[in-house]
Amino acid sequence: MTKNNCITEKRTFKQLTDIQRGMLEQMAKSGTYKQAEMARELGVSQPTVSRELKRGRTRQLDYKRNYYEQYIA
Image (cartoon, rainbow, N blue to C red):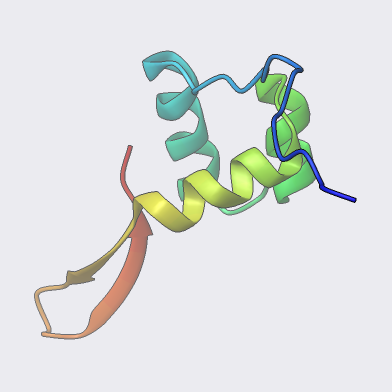
């Protein structure tokens, strides 16, 4: 028996808009929101927020030469 690996359903993935990314950056900067709350505010799923935060996180150096991580849209 052979297995067919063809996907016939259309995928429904959508990217975040620039406005949503800006809102996500402000929420991440404030530190008072959980990922589920961010997702609810933006109208997207929680894994989308998680992936976006992971992809947009960069390592920064402050004026005392200490490293910290920050999400930058």
